[in-house]
Length: 348
Ligand code: F6P
Figure 1: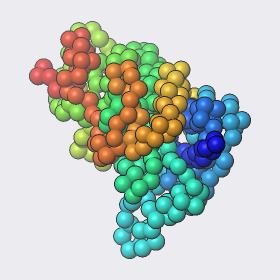
Figure 2: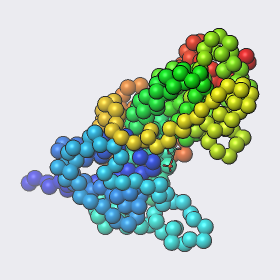
Figure 3: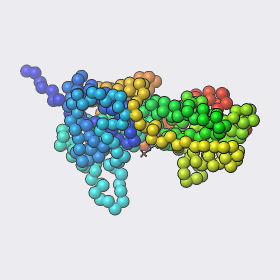
Figure 4: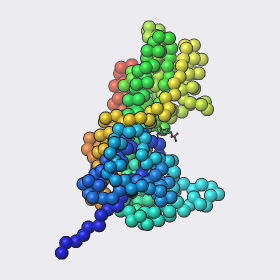
């Protein structure tokens, strides 16, 4: 007598800030789940809100075609944190309960949560409540603990590098100091990589405390050495004493100390928009397909990750709450210093 195996029913959601490659990851999970493992796939709308409100669509294989190159996420996203207690609002407290209800009522076997640190934290809490959960790390910040790389990062580096390239010519024409502020939250990965790829003269990241005098000295020395312009790449997360952006603080301080004309550019959300780079398409696809394999093998409560070029899994309880920051002695920083790139901490 042949035993009939129940078809697995899985959910996918994208949460937190969007980034290029989300659709590639949804497609990777969905297509592999359907084609290879015969699973049924539901897509939850707007991150954890979709689970709370039982707001979903059934994803057929045909709906997963033609989305590989598309930016954003076909499922939408939100910064909803179901475990966050909002003061004087009792309705907030039953969100995890509602999620459990949705999970049970829809007969789900697993939910794939595609997101950054906050998402992995929530995913871990849901796993602790007994739900089968698998995480996929995405973010332009590249700061998810437990993986060497997140998808979205490479695309953002490409966009920021292109912007820096364009600043070189206008900076040179006017002999100005150009400051470009890139995203990255508390981490300096994006500033470091785009700064190096774009030939930045000064790169300021949260992990390496800078001294404004040292930054200004470096700019003055460049002028003395007949280098008429300077490019300063700054991560949004550096500490500074003013209320506005890091770029506007630096611009004011540099003009005051050096009396050299300075302009600022805050790159903003262009870094998160548009089509993913080819490598991000591949990374997101690999993560997605691997997540489907993990579901088939029952490897729940984990996040898929890349370590030294190999796909692996990391327990969600090790990921949630941890940040992967740039080591101040990162090999790229050491190389950069040897080439004369300043990190704003040298005695000049
Ligand atoms: O985490 C991605 C990111 O773009 C950060 O680099 C940035 O600090 C933050 O999101 C912006 O968030 P929001 O989309 O909520 O403005």
